[in-house]
Image (cartoon, rainbow, N blue to C red; front, side):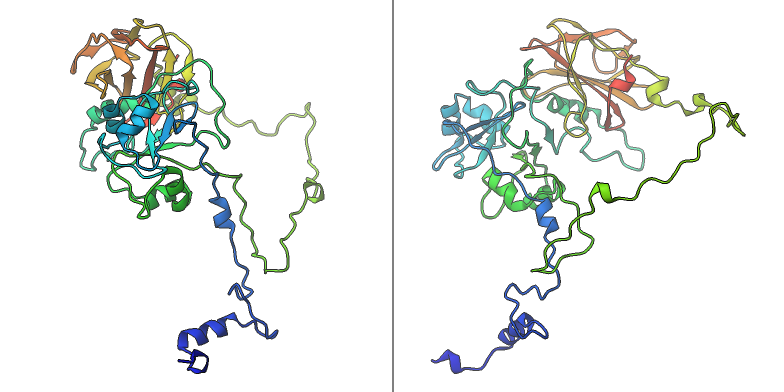
Length: 398
C-alpha cells in the first residue's frame, strides 16, 4: 500500500496544526508553540551521579557504608566478598541470604567493613520509620507508645560507633539514608526529598517497576547544584534569558532620620514580664546524664538526640525526676531506657548497660540508672521529647 497517498488521520492533522507557528509559516519542531517552556523544576531536581564503588563494590561515607551488587550476586556472595556475616547483612536489609540481587542494587551495611574510611559519626542519617515518624496519639486521648520510641531510639545512634576524626566524603556530600516504611513507594519517597524517581532508582539499582520493600534502606541522591530561583517570566526560545539586575545597580537605601543620643526618648515602653513567657526549656533545666564531649549534635529527622562521649562503665544519671516508662532492647540486645517527666517530657537513654532500674520505678534527679556500654569509642545517645516529637536537648541541659 502507498501510504503517501492515503488520507491523513485526525491525530496527524492535529500534530501538524499544533506545530505551525502563526504568521511565520514555519514549523515549531519542539512543539512548544513559542509559549516559553519552563524547565526550572527539572533544574531544581538535578542530582549528582552515584559515586564509584571500590574493588569490592563498597561505597564509604563518613557515617555509613553501602555495597553495590554485581550481576549474578546474592546477599550471601556480597557478604562473602566484603567479609561480613550473610545472615546479619540480609536481616539488616529485610532480605534472606539466598535472595538474588540486581546488577547495581545497593545494600546498606550494618557495620563498617575493613578497608573503608572510619566513620565521622555513629551511623548514617536515617529517616523514615524512625522516632517521631509513627502514628501520633489518637485525638481521643490515647497514650504515647513509649515502647516504640524506645525500640527505635537506637536508630538515632546508628548501627556503628563514631570515630574521632571525620574522613572526606565523596563529592556531593553524604546522602541521607531512608528506611522504607509500609505503604511507601519510590515515587512518594522521591517526591518527599525533591528528587526524581529515576535518580532514586539509578542510585539504588531499583528494577524497572521501581518496586521497594518495607525495611529496605535507600540512599537519597545529592543535589548537583544549588537550587535555581524560579523566573517570573518564562523566556521564548531564541530570545535568550533575562539578565538579573546586579547589586551595584539597585537603589540606595533611603536616608535615615536618627535622633541624637543625648536626646531623651519621648516614650519608654514598659518592661515585658519575662516570667510569664518562660517555656519548658527555660523553666526546667535537666542535668547532663554523663559528663563528656558532644561528638554528634541534634539534627531534626537525621539525629533526634545528641551523642556524648564517655568512658565505658561511666554512671548514666537520670536527667530529672520521673518514672521509668519503658525498658527494652534493640536488635543487638543493647538496653534502652525511657523516663517520663512532668510536663509531657520524655528522655531516652541508648547505648547503656548494667541497668539499675525497671519499668515503673520512680527515679530521682541525678540518680544512676545504668552505665555507658563498651564501644570504640564508648558514648551515650541521649534524646529529649515533647510527646513523640524530638527537640534539641541542649537548651534543656545545664
